[in-house]
Amino acid sequence: MTEYVTSADGTRIAYQAAGEGPAVVIVDGAMCHRGFGPSAGIAGQLADGHRVFSYERRGRGESGADGADGASGADVVEREIEDLAAVVAAAGGSATVLGLSSGGALALRAAGAGIGVERVAVYEPPFSTSDEQRARFADYRAGVAQDVAAGDRGAAIARFMTFVGTPEPMLDGLRNSPVWPLFESVAPTLVNDAEVLDGAADAAVPTELLAALTVPVLVLDGGLSPDLLRDAARATANAAAGSAYRTLEGQTHEVAPEVLAPVLAEFVAKG
Image (spheres, rainbow, N blue to C red):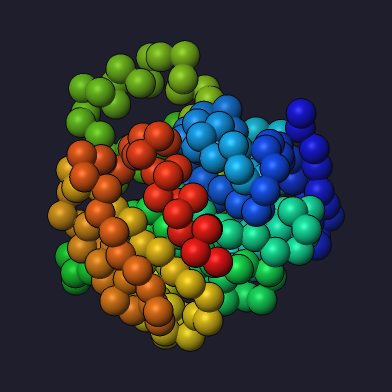
């Protein structure tokens, strides 16, 4: 059953809670929400023994606001943290937070914001670890913001798909598929994901923020994921104080819920 909380700026945020036990809040990555992406499957796996909160980041699903409209980069990140804070409050005021992909970057920022994050686990936060990656991200970030500002949602989605390596023939097929309008419906939120990764406008690993964290941190990656994602995971773990790093063998960036969930349950159980 869908429930709602109201964020600090008045935006209505939709969420669903399932199970009983220690609270876990799942933070989706780019374009994903309860109806599209891995969070529903992960919640289903975790609900036996945990109270799992799956929420829709602003501008997605049943949550309000495009989020990027009229907001600067710092404001976008602050609003996203406030949204997560409202969900953590609904969870009882404290929770383990699991962030997937760019949702991991948001989870890490929230962990340092004093909103009740007890511990944080992240799966492949796509930070940049080379000059080439940082320059490429800076170009993408500027371009997707221009696409959204111009109201060209299709161009924003195509830019994102190209940025993450979608082959052109596959991109052409997606443009002509029923899923494309679903992608376009959340296109403005690509700006938000770029901003939470931003760092110094190039998605560099936020080493100062990570070094200052005072909660347990678990960084995960997939054994079959590209080197650039695994490099980012290792760099994140190296920078985060008191962190643990673990590779899930046989997994890619699209991690299987049945593989991820037991690892997270073990992390929660350590207290």
